[in-house]
Amino acid sequence: MLRKQLDKEIPGKTASSSFLLATWNIREFGSQKRKIEDYFYIAEIISRFDLIAIQEVLGNKKALDKLMPILGRSWDYIATDATEGTAGGSECMAFLYDKSKVTFKNVAGEIVLPPKLLINGLQFARTPFSVLFQVGWFKFYLTTVHILFGKSTKVNPQRLKEIESIAKFLTKRQKKEQTNYVLLGDFNVPSVDDDYMKALESGGFEIPNAIKEHPTDLGGTKHYDQIAFNLKLNKTMTLFKEKIQKAGAFNFTKSVYKPDDWKIYMPDFDKKYVEGKSDDEIQKYYLKYRTFRMSDHLPLWVELNVDFSEQYLEELLEYGK
Image (cartoon, rainbow, N blue to C red; front, side):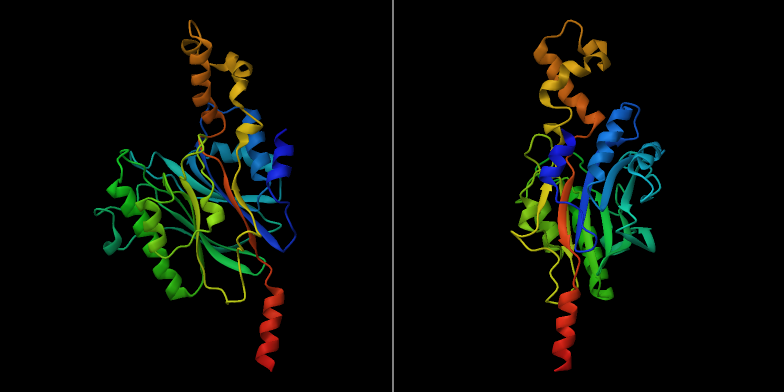
């Protein structure tokens, strides 16, 4: 059932014309709560993309060690060290990519802010990770973030400042280097109309409407995860065409860990959440339980055009006239 859903909702991979990019916050990826079947489900989803950023990888990276053999020899990953401190949660961030399609261009580093962009005198709660990749004609720096959630106030000042700082920092680099930047990950943006999203866009990044349309929480109301672009391409070279190319948030709960599957997993439930409880209470517990088996976020993806050969040849012809 999962494969059928993926076949229906995710475009097929191509050799060189398109590029499937994704981001996924996989809840506590590396905890002992996850079973081997979950790694196969996760690998099946990841394998449909060419490159995916993963947040909330636990510092021991045991999850990656279990996942990579399932993905196969054509896949590799680049990961950060764990971010220390209470807010950092000993989390890592990682890029997983299909080597048959994506080339790592030997540049990788964690973002360290200059004094003018510090967040109340501090660096990020979780250090962003930036890597240089190339897919077809498209060479780009890919930066992933897991922005601080903090207290659930209407506008959390520190969360807002983190988004402002990373957008301004990368935009300054983009202008200096005249290259392409893609910024993605868990921004903890509740709504596409709130101040957090405005800070990201006013900082120099654009987000296609086709991406904005898709909430990434399991409840289908929050736009926590985003994929944003700050590009330096020739005018004839379009990376994403609205209404032609696709984007989405893959809702795996239509195929695995469906809302009505709670009876299947009852033998694994903690007894205190089962004994003496009503079916409604058990089902409510299950809805949270499944987020530790898969995630409380959906993978957000976008299909990009990376074959600019025709545009390049047309420019040569114009230049020769």
